[in-house]
Image 1 (spheres, rainbow, N blue to C red):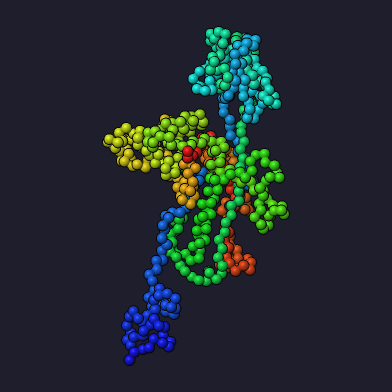
Image 2: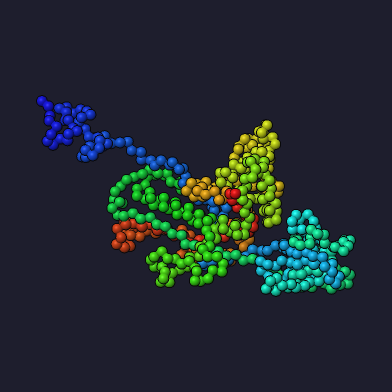
Length: 508
């Protein structure tokens, strides 16, 4: 007797007289719209563990390696940096002109400075160098000072009437020093029984400021989804592992926000340039309380690391770009060292590089190591001629001139979802030194790294990293919203001190 394919059995099923697993008598979950509608005898194998196909996805940790975090109570941080000790001027104008006991003049270019009065005094000795090559020089004694207007600006003591040292004849200044020259003061020269130096130089300093920005994010899940349990085994980027339910998304939101805390300090920029009128300020206008036009708040922005270096530091474009990678890059690197000599000359520096720049440095070091190609048994500098370290193509440290450098890849510059999208920034050089400052909260002098983060905090409020839960799900009963909202907030800014010692590598 055979069963008819009709009645209560679907056409795809043919019941068997014995309990046997046959192709015709069970439902398959992949048999289209007609199959798998009321039973699945065989479930698919389910991998509980999440596949980490992007490895460690976080890009944070850079500021933790090179800086520190300290609280502050104000909405602005101001610091002062010393100016140079010695007196020097660029782009001055030299001329041969007889004036009393002087036989030449030098007009100081004070445009762009914070003063309208020159700092050179009568009786001081100066050295002049041509602006084009710096190879032609002359020395002179300041005999008297004069005033000269530049356009509508009245300057004082900006004309130096000098007597040039040496047998100079009718033209004491050579043709190379007539026109644009650079100069600096190297001493003074007085006769017997004369009065002392007239006037004095008041030391000055330069002030800088930065403002914290408020960073926010949140994660939300409705009450119904929290009741549908589905465990996922994870190994999180912060070193924890185990099973997560709906808080898997909350964990990733937190990690993403922690990355934002660092990325904002690196990429931050002031919203409005200096001199912007109040009518053109950018205001918070995203809706909700405090939005425009009902008394909105100005969005100031903040000065991040890249902006600070571009404004006050050193920018080098196209490292090893003109020559093939290898020893050709050494010339570029030596130009950077020469510029460091003109700045603070800090001995130890850290290089945080993109993959391309890191390989350029490796090729450069390998090419200049004479015995590397033949014997592979010697190196120099921080390697201490260790043959085993010479075999490591990923150099971690080296010495050039009087400087030590430690380099590492910076994931932020390589990740395809961050700066890896752009070729603008190839790396950054950061000095490893510290500076002594007076801390108002501690009431004493402390040593701080050149790069550090300030966050808003007081005895009652700490805004370094806040998180809280609202809603009516997950133990929170604060409103009628049938959801759980986890909010994150931080208010912070980056202080980049002595930016003249930093180097930003940019693509050509």
